[in-house]
Length: 325
Image (cartoon, rainbow, N blue to C red; front, side, top):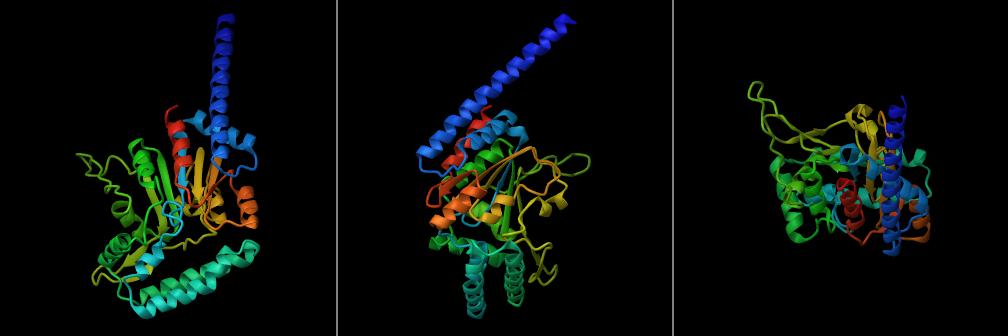
């Protein structure tokens, strides 16, 4: 009995020492981020969360990233704008008028969510309904992505391509949770981020894939007519800026242990919420439109706030530390 108790005590001591080392490493990273100009309202809390992510290791980590102006640059075209670029002038006119009316509402930091959410749904559905009236094909989506990329209007945030390649290589579960268009995001992963299309070996008996791409895109999917090939609708539920959470991922039945959340809108801070389980979430917000009011609200919603002109170096530093555990 004494031997067993001694062994248990030593195991606990080793665990405590390891956790202390992780907290020290996390605190050093948080200090590094602060020195680089990041806004961290509660450095101790941020270090504790980061320490928990490091302790959990890559097998317990899920990276949840917004797409538009998070993985893409702060001034990049959005997924919807990419499609608009290859559609008719009447569509673009409607899209511009919708944007002019609803975007200030989306960015209004003082409007209650209860008032904002119905208006966001109204905006997205109006845009999608207008798009369905165009003759949109899959080939047009690919052409739109390449056209926007080649013109410089559609571009990745610095460090995003390398980060996604690393997450796939190390098989870190990754959700790209976007209020944009799934088909555009998937095409952009190939054309903009140079991420090859996932190819899985198949089971010799069943013919089924034996592995799954660790990078998943959860967004508004475009439904095309099986014969005519034209866009005929969109998947449900509709995903917009303020309902992006685990409730729209696997019907809220997915299990998260630790999450690293990355976004540029206040609604993105909720992307890890609503799942079956969550131990710890470290949230990083990119402030693309800085103001004193914005800084305060982002600092309250996110653990670490990064200037929107910066790349993904802080995220990469965190991922590197977690996977090196």
